[in-house]
Length: 133
Image 1 (cartoon, rainbow, N blue to C red):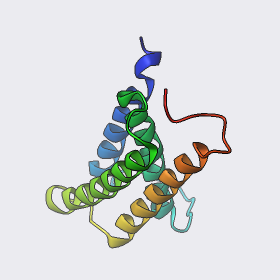
Image 2 (cartoon, helix red, strand yellow):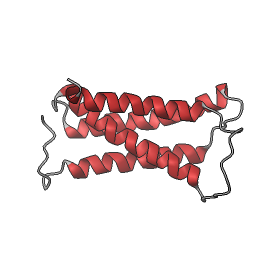
Image 3 (cartoon, rainbow, N blue to C red):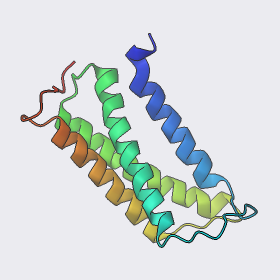
């Protein structure tokens, strides 16, 4: 039974993980002396790339592949972009130590585009895995 709902559980868990990390304040934590340039943007990009990939697989799993690939990609692309904007607005409105940044929205959007691009490539005609289950 768990295997039947694997991507549903992974996607919902990932969304909750992103939400908690985005709204939790890390101002009191010691991050050490390592300074990676643009680490914040790389993190946003990675989070939303995974969001888009898991989201597409979630749609495939929930609809048994009946929703065509193109429609699933568009749905997940817009969902990821809108969710990223929503989280940035929440950071601005309800957190004291977090701030909304246009660069974060851009990194989220680019990650979502790459994620749906990877799914499109993975389920292309040259690949043995088919979209329909």
